[in-house]
Length: 213
Image 1 (tube, rainbow, N blue to C red):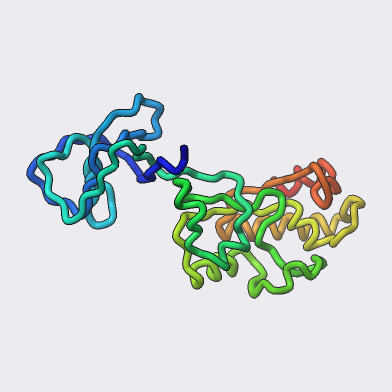
Image 2 (image 1 turned 60 degrees about the horizontal axis):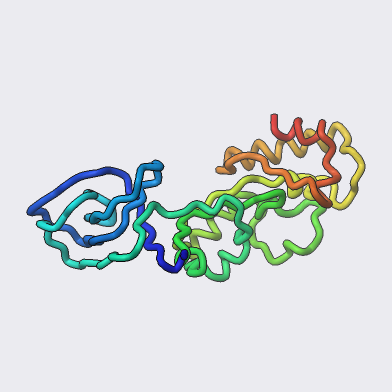
């Protein structure tokens, strides 16, 4: 079913005649993401942005895409994605884009940063230590999709305590809170947790609450 999807960011409704667009997507079944019934229509794109949605039969275009039999919708957001490291190998994320996914959210439990401290050497190949450095690395490599990330409570825990399951000391908890604060200032969407197995299952409730504050 997803192979029959053509993804596009629909935002407004309009009927435009006699205008020139860079691209017109014609005859698609438009799903605008609001929950309204889908309708057959066209999408006009100019300078990389959607500028009209509706019946655009009177409009010209440098390129016309026939979307008959396809769904034209806003890009999907994958809210639980583990491509935070593999995106550095293939920034095209073609397997996502071809399914209509245009935004990926990383950092479920673990995250790409912070890196260092008492963590194991599984992150030894990373050339960044914090979230700002990770985002800079992604931008240097190039990426076709939108990305965002939480800071993982497990990542914070292993940075400060390594593989020790006992509750943290006051100083260690203070360090954890500082790391969360830094990650939030650098663009983290929030703090995530994955408590079904270690290291997430080692985090006691009080420590998790303190990190989230």
